[in-house]
Image (tube, rainbow, N blue to C red; front, side, top):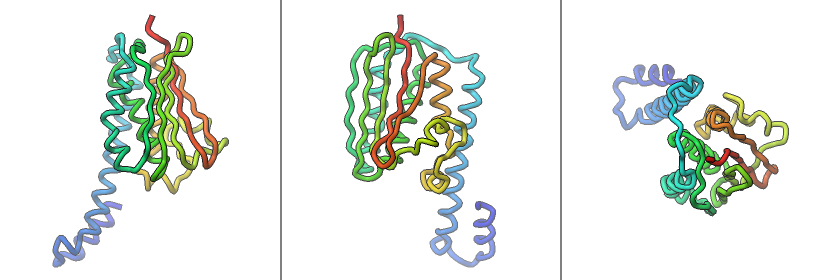
Length: 206
């Protein structure tokens, strides 16, 4: 796509930037997509090579609240209602940067697929010996035949939405890798045309 658009620019050398802006926009759009893909692949490579990751006692409640604060403006801009219920003082043994990444992936997905005037509900609670994080968004939902595969690398149930959302099917696989390295579980439940909920269960710090 980039090569083709550059060829168009070069074949119209006498045109000014304003008249060529459409092709420049297409180039920038593709560069942004490639940059995100490369960054995600590098992040996955670092996750696969887990030797240098530092784990410590982590206040998961604070991590979740900090990510919500960072993303509230984006959620508001997309005309989405956000409701959250985060119990305080929930601690796990983990890596702060990686757990922030998981929460951001969940919220980013929820923003993309809840649609305008949609709704996001986030919850962090204790359940027996686990911390349970859930993020629910209204919207199209995920068909039953896709629900088991959504954490596979590069899997996109609806290919037509992959380009429009700018994704490559790596976000949820990154989240899965992080959660499993934290000895936790990750899964999803969904009802088509109603909602999708992603869950993470992590062992509480002893």
